[in-house]
Length: 92
Image (cartoon, rainbow, N blue to C red):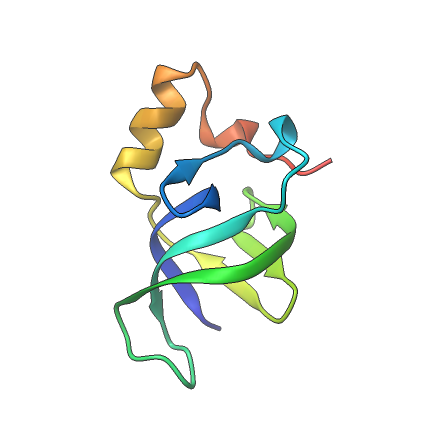
C-alpha cells in the first residue's frame, strides 16, 4: 500500500486545516512511498480526501487509499498552536 510520510492535511498547498472545521475540499500533502508511478520520497498533493481514519492510519482519496506514516512536524506544531491534536482530525 502506498504510504505518505511527513504528511499534512491542506486546503491549498501551505494552508493547513482540520477536516471538521472547513467545507472546502481537503488534500493530503507529503512524501509518497510505494507508488507505482511516482518515485519514492517525492512530495505530492493527493486527490481530494473522501475519508480519514486516524486510528488505523488510513486516508481514502478520490483515486486511492493511503497509509499514513509520520505527520509533518510543522503540521503538528500548527495543530498544537491552534489547540488541536491528531485525534481532532475527523471527517464528519
